[in-house]
Length: 212
Image (tube, rainbow, N blue to C red; front, side, top):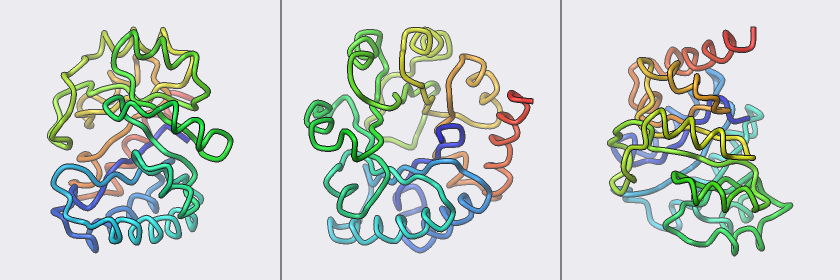
């Protein structure tokens, strides 16, 4: 599930909901293995519009048999029948989310430091997301870049699968995968690409080569 993991919201496609849905559909057709719906930063969607978008995405991802996760909103995830929820460190709500969603939703947790991964190892979650590995412009409040060596350290320490995120592109994705991560989480590489199908296929080919 984690290999080709797309993250995004309308803010990643110039706050154009129609273009956003079209881009996600192209990515699903091309073979992404998971999608996380995340409205953040410059997003202009209201709470009701976000819920409506989540319902449309649930229908769309189901058509392609791809898991849908919702960023930082387990109630919305449960309401629309999503497969999972992703929780960030700054939310400091992981225990509450586990209490509400354990056994009902896939739970992902952002962990960028050794102490965070150590804590996560004792929690009943399904994967951790680590980054930003490289500089990124997709998130206004992004944490400091951790780099490849730190990522490799976190992968070695974690008892959960690790997904790398942050500034991943065609030039650095092979190096990132070499750290032992279970998946690559991308935003701009796919949603701002002129050829979404090609961008997704590049990641899929990387994993195909790894397993062949």
